[in-house]
Image (cartoon, rainbow, N blue to C red; front, side):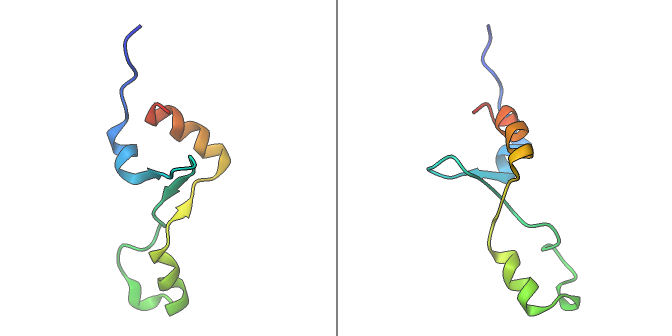
Length: 64
């Protein structure tokens, strides 16, 4: 059976931590920041975790 190919689009967007957690960027952090509160803008700096349901799908796409 041939090797699984990694979906590069997913690999560029999601980081796998040493313990196997999946981290992603937060949505809405790209532009139009002036209308968002400072608290909300600070939160954009920190990565968010991937939800358990979606994590299963992402792992398959990454070949983990």
